[in-house]
Image 1 (spheres, helix red, strand yellow):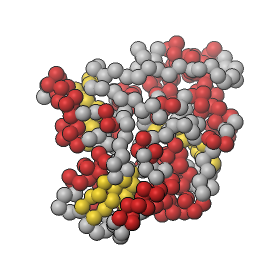
Image 2 (cartoon, helix red, strand yellow):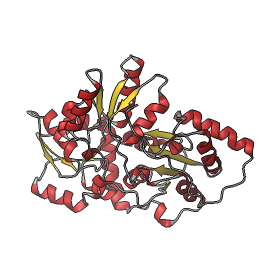
Image 3 (cartoon, rainbow, N blue to C red):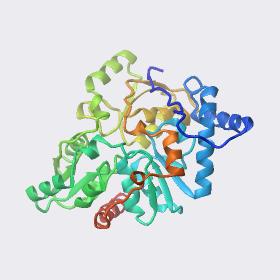
Length: 358
């Protein structure tokens, strides 16, 4: 495999965990290693070291009736150790909305936890790592949207879901990497404003040329901006014509032009697994490292993953200890609170997303 994955997160030893027997720890360690499916990077000894944490988190989830959801970019110990549901932004938004539990713990970045609170305002939403932001979300304010509306009166505003609740409240509809094309095509009129991702906006401009004018805000994802078309072409030369390039739409146009398939994290995982099953194992995944980790865990076939793995420092901010602490005794900054007026406006935005996407 030509893909170098990030360092395995080890326990920091900051939280005392209930006493579990050697047998319980061994059973849990074997379960973890079998689920993660990377025996060299996650040897049994490493899995034993995290087993007390996953056992305690899963015990507390049941005791406190907590639904724990995690984005694909979270680390394998969280995804396969404690998460009740793992997916991309769109699927997790629905999962938060539909979960019967009254407490949701969202292992992700801040805007995703805010989205869960918007769709479930009467539930308690916990976010273990308040400092975990997002370059897209942090790069635009509600005032920026109001300024765009003043400049282009009457033009609908679509925002990528990687935005704060306050920004969503100022926009007409949110979109995700799995539905942005479908929703933007269905918006009324011959013009639309797209915020904040300029790369995804450029992809929309190209796809909707002749149908709609797309006005784009100048924001970008700090992970996906690292990838370049030159690097993709280098790998194509090195590996040959058998290499299939799968890219996330947050990448720039030069990268997307080199891609054989463009889609959300979930779609990239599905496509990589399909290629392996159909005897096309040479795959380059152009997105955050967590996508490759899930592919390795969830396929039975041999895949050769190539390219540069870029890690999101925000997504990787959360560790098992943070989740355990938030479950045990959440701090005020780990409990998502949003002004009721912002929630009401943002709810209309997300309701429109669900309507247009389905």
